[in-house]
Amino acid sequence: MQNDTATLLPGATARSAWAGLAGVIATLTVFAVAQGLSYPLLSFVLRRGAATAATIGLSAAMTPLGIITSAFLVPLLTRRFGARTTALACAGLAGVLFAAIGWTHNLAAWFPLRFLFGVAIGPLYVLSEVWLMALAPPNLRGRLMGLYATIASAGFALGPLSLVLVGSEGWPPCLVGVGAFATCCLCLTVTLPYLPRLDEGDQRLPSGASCLMPLCCSLPCLSPQALSRPLCRCCRSMVLATAWMSRASRPC
Image (cartoon, rainbow, N blue to C red; front, side, top):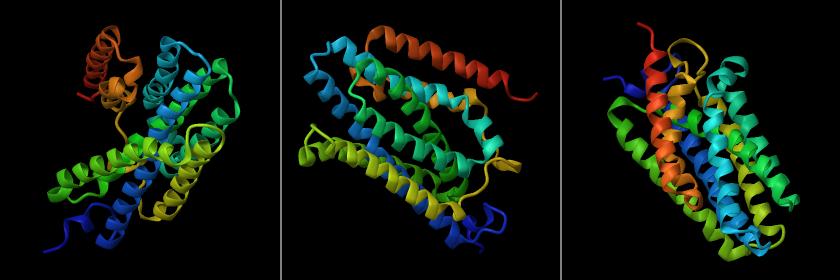
């Protein structure tokens, strides 16, 4: 019986599909380390600068807001530039923005920088999950998604853990984040030949509203410091609104 993986993509072999899956998971793991590092690191820096708890929470909320905003741009970017180019450019831009945040110790500048950082990393989440769903064999898709989520969570845990080794002062922790994004770019470059095109045929991305749904659900988790009852109500309202938008955008 022919392997299910080999029939997922035109001209793709089972070996190349599995190579693509491994590359996507490795890329997200390294990327998760950098993002997991950013939240406690920047909170420690702001705390040392005598910033209030409300200010720290608002600053931390900029990245999730950027991720939500970028969901509407993912389908447009993939149609215009292609999914592979979009993912590679976003990984590089995220590294540059992380370095800019480390270089600019200015609270006012951190708000737009952290928002843009979220805009840059949002497409990486969407595209990696779409690639994983496209490459995974149907009979193993649930297990692979579970493995994907577990490894990504481990990456998020390694980010804060790295602060124990390098500390939270000076350039060393920032260089860890920049190095993680550089490694993410390297993993993507090696993996790109094995990834499907998402801008043609059946591999098109869903609408921006559909991409936004999981991001709205995860907003409180992405920014625990900004978590509050009004924020939770806002998230629920956004989930309902995006569900309606996604349903309305489907063809009859």
